Length: 401
Ligand SMILES: [Zn+2]
Image 1 (cartoon, rainbow, N blue to C red):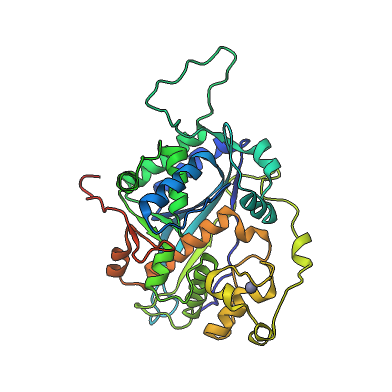
Image 2: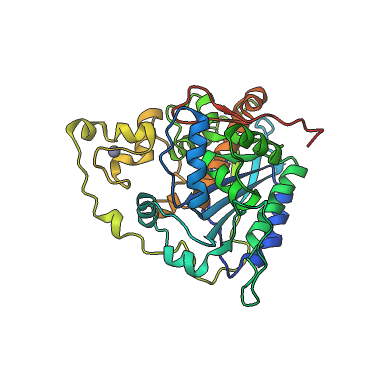
């Protein structure tokens, strides 16, 4: 058997200039998807640690209504017919085709930007210049949507609804074709999507979870919750993805029906991309000057234990520190791997499309390793920090959907 293939990290960069040409391409792909994953970047997270979900929801709602989505990562996964095994003893290889999209978005009207979040975005290569010049405009449902809209003055342009239309189509297809939505730790993402493209956020939490489950009757999966079910040591996205990929690659030579090997092949960009995108920006300058504060223990260990557990640390390491290298952490936990890592070494590891891809890929891993019963038990459950029980969305009866 051939060694696991190295995957191409390609994606489609969608801006105000090309969104219309992409419209049919995206709709066609959603139509044949087995699952789709979404990850958003937004301008504020708010202070939302309350253990009381009713309170937490109200605080999150205020943030979502005043801040904005600045980019959307969308990964569309489609199963490919399995290829015949090269030897009769090996099971056929499961293959998935994946298309990645990165939307640069520009919310109309005023936008609250949290300074920490804005700094984080800029440090990871997000360009607010590009957002204002190339972002796709969209207008969330007005908080007073039960009041009829004020008639436009003759000089006023009609609000741009292309992005709203596209998302309405995507969500409709997911409903009709019973395609589940996959998120990683995605309550904020869900609230931002709801507010931006579905309608006004319901006034209270119970109403929100009911309405979300009606909008997405095919269900929602949280790869953070799935990772916990699979007994992963940590549940932050980069860890879940890297570990899933290693476990997958280790099966290249010992694949069985119970432990199948699978491949996710990323498609090249669909349309010719000749415009400079919202993601191509200055890059290397920060990563090079990497003065870490390191004590002896960490030097001996070779990696940062805090980062290994949570995906961030307060020990004075830069995020790009060698002590935060996921491959070193996994080498320590799982032994060395002879296969390549898929994690890019530049800032794109924090772009929305790459987070969506990591989520979609990790879900493929869980689909191929957890029993169907366990997968079913994870439907509509989401792991939230500070809560003892997963957040549970009501499951909708397929007949009614
Ligand atoms: Zn650290």
